[in-house]
Length: 375
Image (cartoon, rainbow, N blue to C red):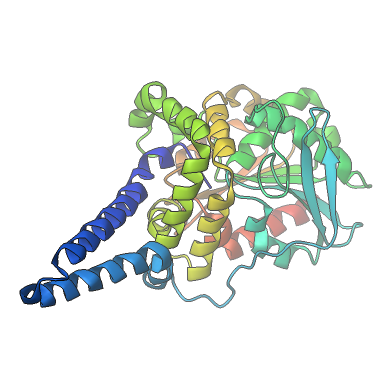
């Protein structure tokens, strides 16, 4: 998941990467300049060893940091896709990729993933909920197997039109439950704005996981600082990402290989209780996202606000929050609970922003209990 906050925290992986590159160049130069000087033989060996060590960390550091940061897990997530898939062609020209699990006669649940990931983040939900529900998982435009938008407009309000097409595709004799994580929840609330008074005629219920009702910089940690920096720094950084996307894509893969992105995700995305596989999966998925799409999506988030629609939502709503979520503080979920009439709030702990993997068992249980009540 990529959040405006990570435009700031992303400085640290960049510093680590640049330090490794600089150290590699320095020790390589030292070795070259002293390799023919007999009395410096010991020094040249040390320099050569440092070159090898820096090279190792540049390309294999992730294995080391996974080992020391993540816990051993009994059920590590896999990047699985269903054999049952479909592609929706939208009027604007882009394609939305869908995958399906479970009996078509069961209660349908539509899943919307977080920003910069894709439907592969739902490994645990696919595994456990497909037994009793019809799961419909979408890749947002430009991510996963969905194609980029032709108009380059990536925002929760625009994605609401894509969600509407998926809801219509769900069809069947039962209205779907819509579940969204992070920007997925923002898209759901934009969809509520789009439908206005028609929501209860199309949807059975909503599940809002670690999301917000307004510009996410306002409901994250360091909110005052991020709001202050939004126009002079965060927005320009997004445009730089878009303009230099190929360069950023290369450096992102270098930071993935050296493990600095794992370090960043460990401290900003989790409550430090994730397994090795969970840490690597969510880091890998965010790295697979096209950088220009990520930048445009963050710009779209800055314009988002769904505050006014909250009191008008007339279907049951389950709100799930994480007690240690830095990107969407529990206070945002409490605000939604206080303003959405028929809503229930559960705060999971210990839980960072990537609770869909870190606290998957608790989330799946809560979603199952919610769905059973509104069947």
